[in-house]
Amino acid sequence: MLHIRNFIFKAFIFNYNCSVHFKDTSFVLEENDEIVAFLVGFVSQAYRQQAYIHFIGVHPDYRKQNAAKQLYEIFFQKVKQCGCTEVHCVTSPINKGSIAFHTKIGFQIQQGDCEVNGISVMTNYDGRGQDRVLFVKRI
Amino acid sequence: MLHIRNFIFKAFIFNYNCSVHFKDTSFVLEENDEIVAFLVGFVSQAYRQQAYIHFIGVHPDYRKQNAAKQLYEIFFQKVKQCGCTEVHCVTSPINKGSIAFHTKIGFQIQQGDCEVNGISVMTNYDGRGQDRVLFVKRI
Image (cartoon, rainbow over all chains, first blue to last red):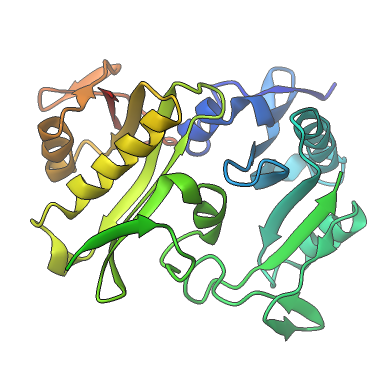
């Protein structure tokens, strides 16, 4: 059975420091003590009413089972308790699945500086040539 | 003349969100309105007495001019004001220049789980195969 808990340190699938410094707002989804999905997020240090989802990963065998949605929901609950009123995240304009997912769970696309296939995009957001779709959701 | 100021958003040389959410603890070093070095750091969300230096970059033409040291010092001052008593950062075991620099400015190497060329290293710290030297400095 899938269950969520706060980040634990065996998840050596990405930068360890995320799981240390943001552990209270980062979560893993496990089955039989194996991590099948994770979400790393934090409360903005500069804008305390904002939370930001840094990244999320779901094991290919566990797609289409609401794993990401469960992680987002527990994150929304947690950062709301921290006093956040909005959650931000970004995705690549080519990641249509991610755009559809975020829109489906209530994220709005923020105004960018250009439009790609009808989607507002901020150019060079994550570095030169790294355009991003910016999402925000009020919680 | 080199001068330091808080992060501004034209520094599209890495993840923009760092410069948004961690802007009060991130700095650029400029000359003639051009960024020649930057430091991105934050106060740990989980351990408020800890600050973490996420990353730093110095333009090759501005090495050996204390650019990194200046950025570290302004960061130390800032996070001390935030109530931090220690600063953490990590580097790769092969980055001898970084190890020498951090040791020189007063960082201590934390105990890892193995030793490489006489340096204590934590294996798989930043992901599988990504061993790191862990530094801490009391401020």
